[in-house]
Length: 597
Image (tube, rainbow, N blue to C red):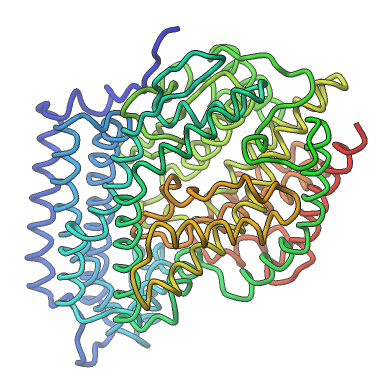
């Protein structure tokens, strides 16, 4: 099997090549010049009244241009460094470059803080100012959002100190979790033979057809997390404690407050969606019970959650997965199929698991060339085929944003999952149409595994993080505390759908989302994306090819408005239960079909 790694040679040659170092120098000079420009033009928070006028419009417009240029340079350098850092945690130069880049990022963060305070000081003059300059009018939404965020700022000095301290605080703890988890290797006993495997490869065994293999992998994984739980618990305490302190200083209502603003939704929307999700749990429990029955068990143990069913034991070669995706993407539009083919042919994807490579999958954008790169841990399962499709959806979303400025492309997490889940749905639904009865069962199984993860498990992760934030305000939590909270959250959501004796108490240790310093509650956005994408796919089924242009327009607009305004273009009111329940009804249809087979 050929080891296929992503190709970024059209970006830079290496981490110490001339072209890389030249752009490093460019971003350093740009930020130094920007600091002088900000100082010379008084771009900072002030109590003095500021009047809108041509000179002010020119100053703000140039600041916006600086941020856009800096985002392209820093984003490209960051993607290139991350291409090494995420796939080889043993790479010392990549680790060094990541640390150096974070220090450069602090300078941009400090400029952003000064700019945010300045826009806040402009206040009521902002609407008048926006009308005086083309660049400002094109960035009106971003400026209005910046004004809103300025209400939750500490003093400029405190914000600068917080950004600098984060490098040895929350961000250091986040890196600790990443390094420990990516380098964790455990012995797995498979049919009497013991093999030492990276944890990402062990987790992939959860979808093996042999229950003995799945159980062995589960037991090995649990023992692995047990062995590193103390440093990871320290990391989680550090990350959450950091966030809590800043939220309190910034006068945020709670940790969820900043998350809602990041996702451009309100509490009513989130509560409405979560309420509909909770009402759907009995439907998922029917699925879990039926799955347990198919496996000859009274209840479903954790190692059987991802167990395959039906007659889809086929293992895909990577080439077969590529062909399958291109063919089925093309049933939506030729453009989407051609886009995927181009990604495969140009080696945009780092394919297989290996020691030092982080688990899971992600898509990252490379701003300088307006391309994307994808990391996955492909093991030949249909589940991994849909994972690649999911990440290609993110990449296609980035493609639809081409030509916009970085500020205009900034998409909230909730809407960022729309295209990915839509593409996943294309693959699964297209496969279902061609499937025999046994194949249909296998594909439905894969689909319901994913949907139960995004609705039921995501809800448990939300409950976990909510309680962690609440309790961490009072004191640090032990590894046992984290395990106890996780188990309680899983019992509340999965209910009697799973065997309560065999849950996954270390889910908190392995999910990198809990350790993302700038993205609290990176869980419910997946549910938002899942249900929104399901609703959009139903519209596609009703409208056919004419939907494609509207869909691309929607993806292009995700950074230009709040979520409710973006979804309203399709007649969807996300503040009311109707939409969420209709999307969940589609999932219920999948469950009923599964029960009938």
